[in-house]
Amino acid sequence: MIDVIGTDAGAPASLATAQQQLIREAHWIAAPRRLQPALNAWLNQPTPLIDSDDPRLLVDALQDVDATVPGVVLASGDPLWFGIGRMLGDRLGTARLRFHPAPTSLQLAFARIGRPWQDATWVSLHGRDPNVLSQALQKRPAALAVLTDPNQGGANSVRRMLASSGLEASYDLWLCENLGHPEERIQQIAPDDNLPLNLHRLLIAVLIAKEPAPQDPKTYPLFGLDDGAYLQHSDHPGLMTKREIRIQLLADLNPPEQGVLWDLGAGTGSVGLEALRLQPQLQLMAVEQRAGGAALIKANAERLGVRPAAVLEANAIDLLRGELPVEIPQDLQKPNRVLVGGGGRQRNTLLQLVLERMEPTGIVVVPLATMESLSGVRRILEDANMTIRINQLQAWRGQPLSDGTRLVPMNPILTVSGTKS
Image (tube, rainbow, N blue to C red; front, top):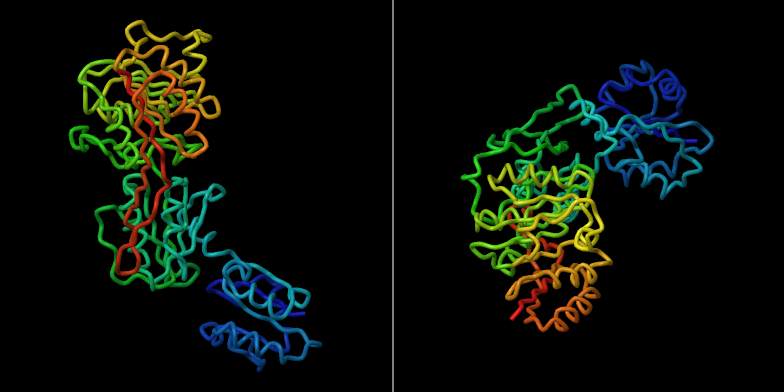
């Protein structure tokens, strides 16, 4: 049996008594070179040491050791979490191995910050496509640990990707260097701070979501705000209309100077609220059935300095059928523009109810995520004798790649607009 023991920077003296006993009883010990001086001093007796810095050479060496005597492999952290454990199991077989994990660098990072990590996600950039970080950020995780790759930009890549995703204001950035070692360093980096020049190669970047600080609405762009400017549902972060899609939907809606705009399935309210920034005299009715949706939209409206005419927390279909205690205000009952962002499987039913209410020459816009949804929406608009326009929007965002930039695709969206004539 080979005992694979996870260690921290204080090993072997910091190990539990049972693990120390395994080391003392071992006929041979495999350990990284950095640990060998402390190990020899602690043992105070000659024990054959095998260099473990190159996992491939270590595995070859262990295949030649006497299988009838006990041996120990010392590894960092948890040997089965991005450690030597996988290679040992593949080459030697798990029947010969017994694992004793120590805290991982991920555990240590959150422990140093003092934040629970049961809701955290993680990505590794070691030898991997950095697109995995871009995809993770689109989901707006509450906490995200990034195992950086110094050969692909390290902490700078994380920071640049955060900025290019428009989320700098929505996350605190922590840099955790050399975790578990005497010279470890933990520091929080503000968006306008320069990165330290002497960052260690062993570095984990931790992103902790936060509510973006409010700013003067006059400092925001007229439309096309960064995704990070909006408050989002804490239990479903990332479920919002992304900036590039918002711009297209606003163009398709062509909001008039005056009139009524319905935003059905409004989510965070982003499209309707930006329409108000373009046309402040519009009357916006935002409808979102998710619990807490109305409060969230009102909070975002305050951040943007606009005032919707009505924000309703309700099922849009039930609302239009008059099956709820809440009613549509009288002056908002006939819209000039409608964005049908919700409805799900009942989208076609919702669209039919919308067309019955729209003013002549009105415009309805329907964003779709699947091709299968297109035929039903198109048929309904054609039956209503509307002029139809169909677009497919595919956007890419520039993300850092080592010393260059690569274009990372976002999910494509179909937009269908119908105009009454």
